[in-house]
Length: 216
View 1 (cartoon, rainbow, N blue to C red):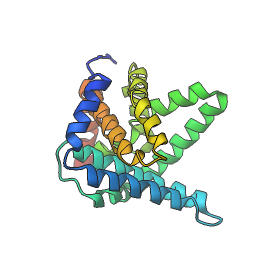
View 2: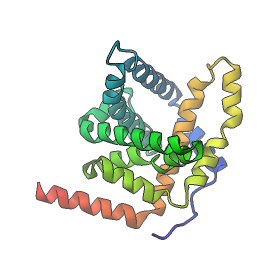
View 3: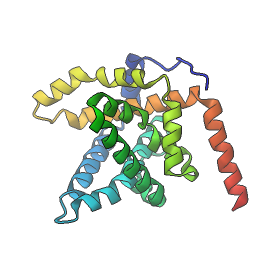
View 4: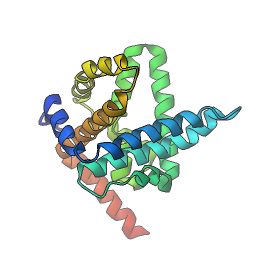
């Protein structure tokens, strides 16, 4: 697969993200807050918290990233879209489960392989949103292929928020209410840029979608 380095810089992605969030900060903050509360509460259910968390985190995460994709693509963006991921529950659940298992196994080897695994699988739910027919494992594989040559660039994007993270900690965490949607929007723009550089790979997924539609 041919790799291009045409993705915008971290500074450019952050500037684009700030512009896209204008007029949407309230919804974005509420979205991130509710997502965090729901996933946290799911893990506190007595006796079966871990199971409940595994069941709902994948669909909620799929809905979460779909909201930010709608935001950057200037599509109708509503808080209710957070729950859209439950329409593809099986793939979302399996993707989250497999990513968790793979990441934990790599982390057991050492911290750095675990970080690399997180970066490698980071595009999975975005891919599931755009190509819901391909299933969990293929979305993970596609994310791995897309991230070849780009993991360091995404890591640098995360690092570019370090100063804001420190400031948010100094505000006793209140700053994270605004920082979280800011970071998420930047990552979503990273995916969109990456998708634009991977036309051949993603075109094959689109063709698979068309074939699946014809066969049904």
